[in-house]
Image 1 (cartoon, rainbow, N blue to C red):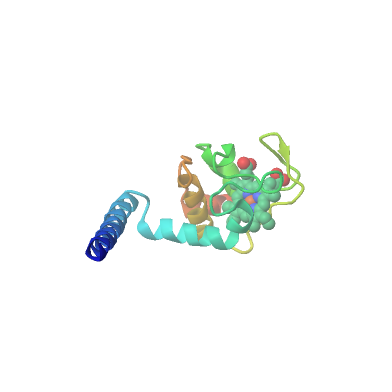
Image 2: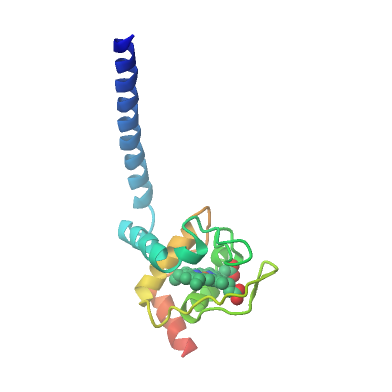
Length: 148
Ligand code: HEC
């Protein structure tokens, strides 16, 4: 009986290690086809630091308080101009999918570089099943200049 339990346990460990190895291999090759490994990882890290507290790590926001970015029209629209403008300049008193949010969305134009904003936006546009087209730092730079 003891031997049997030990065997079950070791089998479980072997399977867990194999799964971890397979999973890491698969996700690494998936990320290879994205813009670049660094941009994706950096976008996610920056998102957790600057956006995740309100919009939540799963992109679902908080009902009635912070809008979801998962499935958001702004985030999934092919033209990323509005997405860029909101991050640069913030947003207040807008209605998002029929809901009015009392809290303002802070502006990040003074805090984050064009490259950081592009990395965050690209992360949001590819995460949680979103499928918005990606943006380059140059597009953020030209919006920054236009909004001045
Ligand atoms: C302090 C909380 C807070 C933080 C931090 C925050 N947001 Fe927001 N965000 C909001 C609120 C509130 C709104 C809705 C504002 C409104 O409708 O007036 C919003 C709206 C948005 C929208 C528009 C969503 C839509 O569907 O129209 C986008 C895009 C967005 N935020 C992206 C970001 C990004 C990117 C970051 C990080 C760089 C970020 N937010 C950080 C609170 C926040």
